[in-house]
Length: 191
Image (cartoon, rainbow, N blue to C red; front, side):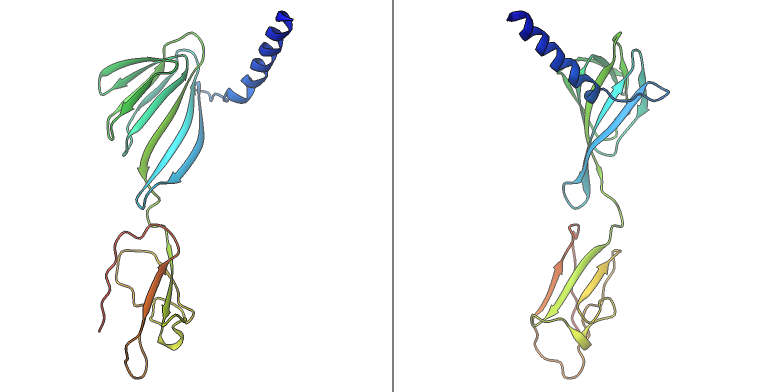
């Protein structure tokens, strides 16, 4: 009974290895992006699995945001602006934004890290807006930067003409809905 349990566990473990192992490139590195997602209006979080063949190093580089590297397998030596840090499976290092760093697998087998870092989001991403006057599309009172149904797209930092009242000017309820995330600040001028 004990032998069967051990063999079953071994078969289960060996059965999962191909799914976890990454394809290594000609330099002995495998890089698989697991997630990339905006976490506020100006930055995104990125998580990648990086696999290293035996003795392989990832060259010196830096990121505009912080990085947290967690060793999932093997032993990796990090060089953080000349300071050497040796991490084994289950250990983690924090790398401040802008710090030049590299990583090298110092073991005889493959090594892997889970790297999570932040960076600037996609600059210039268009933001869709919807404008209403008194709860209705502006129709003939739309400005040059929206259509009669109140639809518009913000593509740059500038003033946008959203409403241009025709006929007699009167008190109106004006609403702008931002349909996409990313609006940081805005100013309204009337007159």
